Picture 1: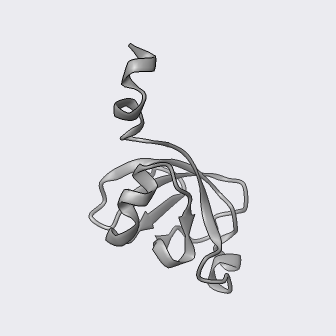
Picture 2: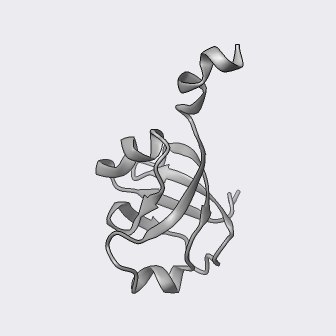
Length: 90
């Protein structure tokens, strides 16, 4: 079963993503080949644990030549979001 396009973040960037930050080139571990710009992606830890969802800010090809601080994937939602917004939801 394939999940579509995926982005893996380095351990040093997991908490940043879980607190609502975008994935930058510095935090990029891997990205599925042939990912296009503005395509929905599933964000994983390097241990293949799903962390959330995002939108590719750059294509796979563009990520290779991106500056270290450049955004690779825009944060959309993550597994910590419920805990941060529990009072508003409940």
